[in-house]
Amino acid sequence: MTTNALTTVVSYPDRGTGGSNKYRGNCSPKLISDLIAHFGPHDICNYMCGSNTTGDAASSMGIASHTYDLHSGFDLLHCDIPERPQFIFWHPPYWDIIKYSDVMYRASDVQRRYGYDPRQFDLSRIPTWDAFVKAMNYCMMKQFCALEKGGRMAVLVGDIKKKGKLLSMLFELTKPGTLENVIIKVQHNCFSDHTAYGGKFIPIVHEYLLLLRKDMPLQFPLLMTYRMEGDIREMPGATWRDILADAMEGFQKAVHLERIYEQVGRSKRAQQQRHWREKVRQTLYYHPNVFFSPSQGLWMLKKYA
Ligand SMILES: C[S@@+](CC[C@H](N)C(=O)[O-])C[C@H]1O[C@@H](n2cnc3c(N)ncnc32)[C@H](O)[C@@H]1O
Image 1 (tube, rainbow, N blue to C red):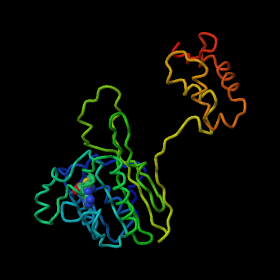
Image 2: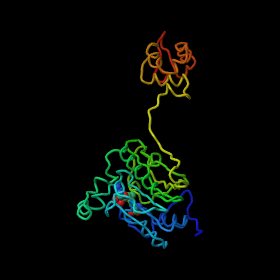
Image 3: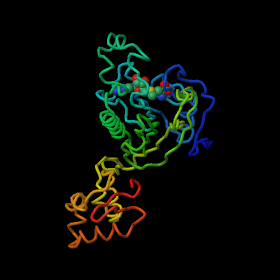
Image 4: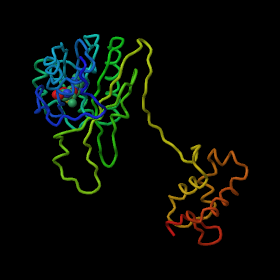
């Protein structure tokens, strides 16, 4: 097929038919149809299919689909992937923003039909962000491993804002293989549209669709995020002014030079410089716009003077 409805920004204000718009967090079947039209896979797999938007889009495009969900007996964390997929569409929960088991379907029904309580394996019920990221990345790698050579994954993820902090699925998702594209998908009819935000909150009105390709079997490139604690005193790009100003942020009043020496004396930066105390004093004098000395031997940040 030659139609190319995919660009790096996609928007489907009219959702289209397929799946269910009552299933919270559902996506537009038009996105999946556009992916099928663009890449022309002979079939498509989805291991967290929700209301089966993927299956319906595949039928409308005349290709086969293999779709599963926790609500119908398949837990991606513990079940083997039955196929060797050529194309996977994956739309995981955006952590706990929408809870699925026992909200969109009854846990007791799943227990009765399939013999397990879905709440214990549901990604949307994982209590902490870190544990969610770990489970998300386990699922990511499990699906990538199952792909055939040349196979693709299209992964739809969103960012979450909680208590002034962005929890970014885009950044924390492990990206195996060749990253082909990141497509911005404009969100329509999302929950935040109906919420009146006071203050400085910036509503999130888009999601990301990542396209990844498994070019090489067995060994493959991997892009992953890890978090660490940084220390300004050890940063190659930090100047002495930056280090001293940061060290003095904790003191909101004038302190003796000795207190400032204590903050920086043990850093690698100071240890690499024989005359670091002189350097500290020189820096304080050099930047009267940042540092202020109310009296001999006492220093503070000018903004607190
Ligand atoms: C964002 S929804 C998918 C919505 C779908 N794209 C649609 O249009 O309806 C995420 C789905 O992941 C399922 N899920 C959560 N944890 C799972 C797990 N461990 N294994 C399989 N499915 C899981 C939930 O039941 C939910 O249906």
